[in-house]
Amino acid sequence: GKANDRRFDAIAAGIPPFPYRSLKKALKMADQKQDGFAQWFVEVLAEQVGVADRQWEGAAKRALDEHPEAADPQLRRLEAWAALATEALRKIVKKYNKHLGSLHGHLAMDRVQFSYLRSETRSE
Image: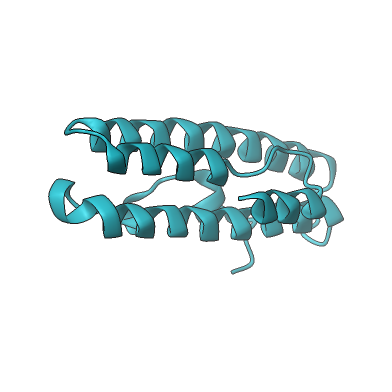
């Protein structure tokens, strides 16, 4: 929620925070509604995470073009953003699986294909 947004702001990577709060609200709405909302949530998740991923990827490309050396502070900030976003996505997937997974199928993090999760600029 708000604490998550503050952590992203503190990183100052030049891209918006990961949409954890809006995804958490969408998941809560999907959990309270009728059938079909689980699929709606998965679509919202893919769309919002896709937007965040494209923003991260663009910022990473710009940083690499400007400063190809891995010690660049902007690359470190982007790596920190990616690590925090990965944790936020893991938490959303975990909440989905806990509340809706048994009824609609579990989501798996290892099947997610976003740049910030698999980037070579990541040091993890």
